[in-house]
Amino acid sequence: MTVLTNETAVYAGFGFLALLLFAFVRSQKGSSVRFEVVAQTLYPHKDHTYRFLLKKMNGYYRCYITRAPIFPGKKPKYYMQGYETDPKNNTPFIIWRGEPLRTVEAAKNNCRGWANANQLLMDYQRTPD
Image 1: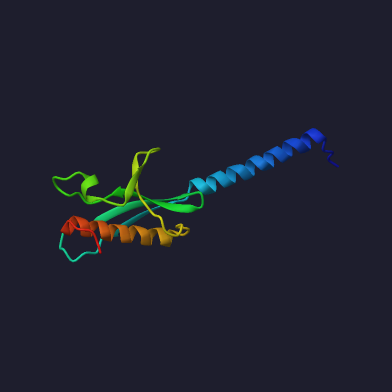
Image 2: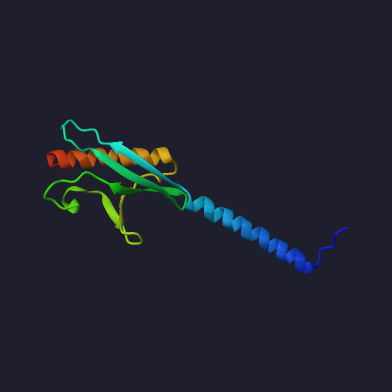
């Protein structure tokens, strides 16, 4: 028969709590998905490919822009709208003020809509109605 002292029980309790904390942090940290979309517009432009990194933060997804087509002779801030830059990692992300993006599919739909609107701006130099 094994006898546990109070000190051993305390160490076992701390170990169990540490394991739970580790599992929680790991589940939050590994929640990112790479996503690529080809924007749909009527203008036959050669490059419509956008890439995103969908990261889960505080239970919701944020859409980081990892690649967008270039517009020759212009800086991105002149033809890309609706994004901000994350000061922690200096990466642009889509501004979203609607319902929180709780699922990967919701985040992908957000990326598709933003890519289509941004490509329309690039192709025609105008914003969608």
